[in-house]
Image (cartoon, rainbow, N blue to C red; front, side):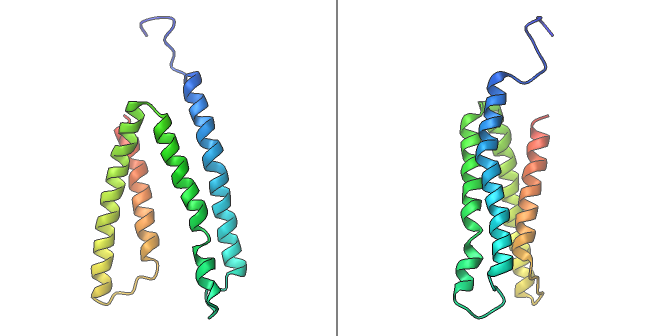
Length: 137
């Protein structure tokens, strides 16, 4: 450290941004969990009711709130944090595109992968997190 004013702890602004993100993110994720539970219990996705499509799309609403929380957090962050997250997002996007192409081609060849979209989401989110962690070093 070059001065007694230098600290290794988080600044008041960092803590405020973290609290603001939590205020946006936590309710959105709670809504997602509730929506998934409601769809599982009452959705009848394996039935033949036309309402099953509306039930199936119910979790999209809280996912949009999660996207809003992430975008707001990016806007609140400083340039370095934005750069780190955008590098992570770029890697996550690239992994998602490659996963879509690979799984799509395998399905065209006859391989049945019923959870293919979830594999793509998992691969994208994991690679985003790992890439952001590596970029922040």
